[in-house]
Image (tube, rainbow over all chains, first blue to last red; front, side, top):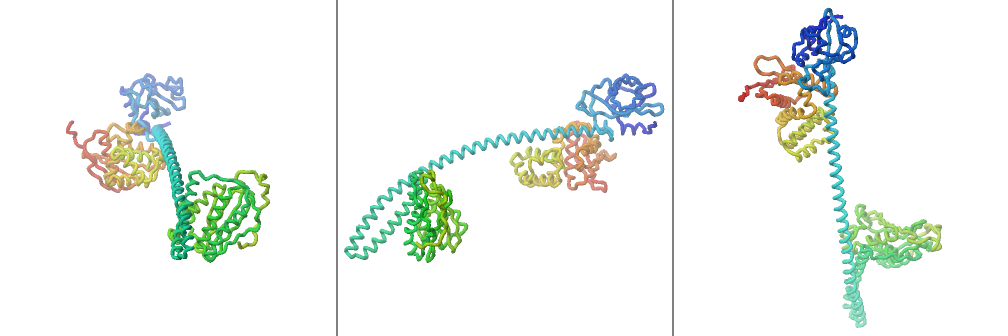
Length: 427
Length: 183
């Protein structure tokens, strides 16, 4: 076996090489060995300065040369410096071609490995660099985990603070709402009482004027009465809403026929509709529609919807349909009136909102009717919704629970009493 | 480039401009926490976007910023786990530069997608150091000037990078050393 590398080349590829004579004395060493072991090793016996750790038990040059295995060699005076390599025999020389083994102990006292100690083909340095990368990655992971943990704690604290703020704000809002409703209810009552007196006495004065044939006075007093009634209706609506919001409006349950209630509501608005040249159509022939609910509130809902339809429909039709299911009654009030723009529908049920500001100027009203209707519908276990097309007409759908708080058997009717739509009947 | 560069940029900004400026820079650059993993490889566009954002927010010209960043990189890296590696590269400026490629080769063994620059100390007898820099990237020569200044400071070399010359092989930087007046 020949080795044809000069000392310079050996230094380049195996800076920790050791060359021995056949007698076991050191005849040359690599630059790295020289740097780590400052004494002059040349001519000294290898086994007096180095120990072969692997394979174990090698203590002679002969055993060294015939082992054929990779060696791990350590300088006797340097516990932390280990080198690994192979043994080659060339002529009169034995070469230990060694490289350093990087470990956590590379910075042992007096022994500091440098990049130059690793040959270009020695992967130990790469492994050492990879180990540093791993340490840096672990540091990253630790920092990220710490940041996330702190962020999470901060977030939880902010959520707690925000929740407390929201709870306080909610409590304040509820208190304000109750106070407002109480104020409105009281004020509405204080306004309504003197207004009723004004109306009563004005009607008396008008009767007197009629008898005295003072027709100009009659005309003026009639205007006063109309205005007072209009004001009274507005106050009544405000009072109703205030009562609902203050939780002062109770539900009075009784067994009723919703068909009859619907008929009464239709009759109440028929005149108003006819003034506008419109006709009211009640599309239901079955009148035995039993429910256990609040008749007054149901009627108020229907009156609000039908009145609105009558108000906004000129020379057209207003149709009421009733559908029944096992759990619900559904009332549909359709008209061929002015209709509502699609973007306005969502706000219809908000207090004091009308589809168009000009509407209140032309048609009057507070914008509370639909709000009250929805609140009442909720109290009746249902809801109200709207669909409309501008210039074509609107349909308002009122749903209420069929039995608010009673067993059907008490009422003596069965769910099979479902209503079949029939031919339209003009009322 | 790899995320350690982003970490170094973060430290530089935090030290020089504070937390609020850094938050603004992160917002402008669009980077997230996951862009600051040290051994993760990122597209150069992301790194240059970060440097651009720092320039925009701080008002510093890109070239000046790259020089400052290069200088900072040396002290930043020395404070990480790679500080031990840097210690192994050499005890003086020449030895360190000579061994840089060996270190980069070792890093590339773990991160094969990383594109590493090459540095070579050219033979010279004029007393100056001449360093050949080769890279697949362009536009980073101010960063190299900063790196060399940072290394000079590391090894107590008094002087400056006085020359920069384009050659077919790459860019040759000249480091002129002065005798320390205190010495």
